[in-house]
Every structure is written in C-alpha cells, then in structure tokens.
Length: 146
Image (tube, rainbow, N blue to C red; front, side, top):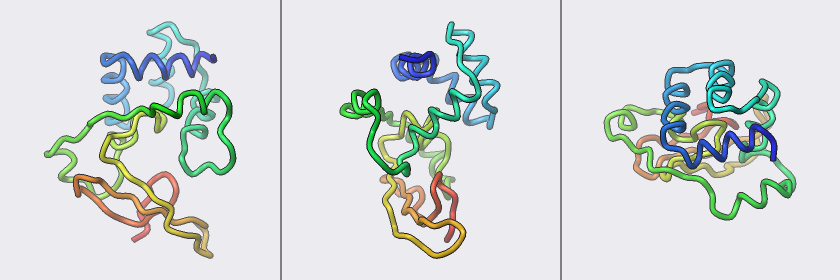
C-alpha cells in the first residue's frame, strides 16, 4: 500500500483528520496544504500522488478497476455531511458532497451518466442531491452546464 493509500485509509477512519481535510477543502486550500497535513500525520505524499489518487477516485474513469481499488470498493466510503444551512444554499456539487480526493462521498450525493454530446465537453452527467439541494446537468467533476 502506498503512502497516499495509507493516508486516505487513515482519513476514512480518523474523524479528527477527516475534519481537518474537510476544513481544507471547504476553504479552497491547495494540494500543498493537504501534503503538509499528511506530513503532520507521518505520511510522505507528493503532488503527483494526489493527482493520481484523484484520477483513481474519479467515477468517470472508464475501464476496469485496479486490484487494490477493487478490494476497497465493496464497502464504499460515505458520510452523512448534510447541513441544512450550508447545503440549502448549494446550487451545484460542493467539496462536502465528495470529500477529499472524491474518496468520501456524502450519503446524499448522486451522479448519473446523461449521455455524450458533440461539443468540447464530450460527456454530460446528471448531478443531484437526494435531499433536494441541487439538480443539474454538468460535465465530469461537477461543472454546471445548464
């Protein structure tokens, strides 16, 4: 298991660490801050590790799962991140919906393939919150089209 995989597993099981990652994500902090936080917890991760982890976590990636991804896929990692005040103001997918590197989705976050289009984006996805906070068609990674 790589340092990044170990860090993600620790974050999934450590509420304090996940709260710190959530705070970084909500503040719009960059990869450098996440790397520094990983170092505080004894993990040596790089910017490339973060990029690769985000690519692995992206549900739009086509193809077969890697063996290590398959082992963790069965249980999934979700959290109830619903906050009526913050979520009630949402008009699109937020950090709280998908978590650190899209590894810990909110229980209410949903996305569904909505077809291919012949423009720059190529794919359209239907993003919606099961609590009714937002419902829109967008591009991979949650960008809003309509």
